[in-house]
Image (tube, rainbow over all chains, first blue to last red; front, side):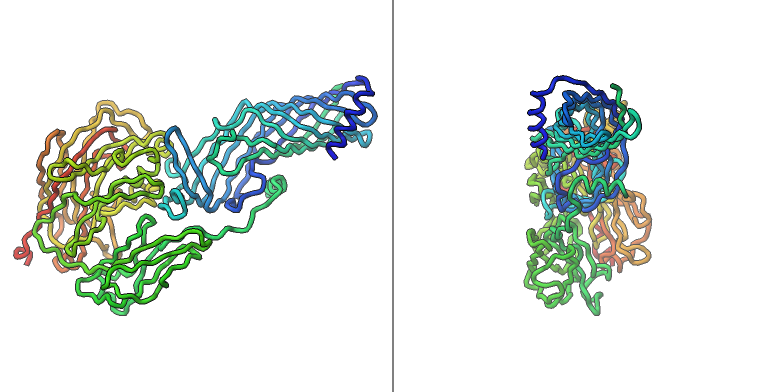
Length: 244
Length: 382
């Protein structure tokens, strides 16, 4: 389906000239998480999910509109953040710091705080099924300039090395819990696919929804502390205003 | 709630079925007897918890107890199975019985030895601790450290001394045995000796707000489970002792490290580290009859204490120097209780006096050898 749209767009592009360029400003809110695709059985429960200031500010330019098709290039300034507390059971963890490391199976709660302020450039094919409607699909690339991935394991216990290793209780207060900070192991460049829909409901004002599916993990590929690769999977809701 | 639902939809797959337990511990051992007093010195001994680091369980019983048909009952990790079965009858006079525990998921197993040992009364007036018997242990990460054992009258050895080495091992995956805070050295005053050194715990230890680990050795047990969350309760000071101690003697060397630091790692100016060397004698059951063990919160302050022998200031010296401290009694001894193992003795050595609060100087080093507890003579006792 996606390919068909892209191919037909390519076909049309050769026949069309730059008839008009439409520019939209966007204000949105990102909601979602940094998560493995398919939760492992060792993650038992999401105990809390707190909202973070995950705002999106953007400008889009849609070009070569010929018939119902077009191409859109955008620039967004956004944060994909989350603040979750999850209960895990027999979850493999490995914490490294310089030459030191600590490895084992953790059962208890893990608090994670993610902040990723980034500049995102989406390139999308567009399709207008009706006057007020626009559907968009295409890849995006992001440069993350502010990275934070930190938190702590708390209220549980660690089995050192394996489930038969020594059992060590982990508490809640500072010094009793296992703090971690994997911010510097995060990738600067991310990419993924975006699917969106815009609906103009009044004059130049419209609303939009979007699904941004990250296809690159948020950490470097050599980072093995967290067994599963974590992908940024975020939905966006917001308002757009047609400037031109 | 709605957000969690949205998130769940986004990640396309919700929580899977709970995996089966992978652990396979004996958590407690208990004995159901019609006359527990015939077998045990104290009724509270009929239920004993087993630390996760222990695989050789030793149950001490009265010298003349009949141990030919005992049926220990185990509390296991949920879903785990034990063979031979919990509650099965065995003759422990033939030596330890081997039990194998298999986890609920079938993937892990632990092998335990359970020994029931009749304890004879101590016979010598002087109890000697020469630190010649050590074993290598590890917490599951393959980094070995020393533990000290004592030889008993029947010739068997048991780990009667605790150290904080297990706690240090948590962040010591890059270390060797000699790098630990508590190490056995070969060139002691006479044979092997104990070397206690205050060590840095590195970046990981700093994260845990435990930037140093003082070298320590104590007659008692180190409960690793509490080491990270509640370190003061991890040091379980003392073992039952059935003679009246009157003098605490031995030999030491001490050299304080350069810079005393606190729990945040800040240097405390104008302070010199000092060691601690002391012995405490106390009642091991409280007024309600509950088993009692001294720990880091009350080792010098508990009302259970009947006598102390504290060397106090430990002058630095680089040659073997004798010490002799008399036990100062603050309560009368109940001799009947004494012979029924109702008192415990704690001996404590540390390279940094305030090491339990993570204050000390990295490099402070205390050597200990030939420790003696001189007891009141038997005829005087009667």
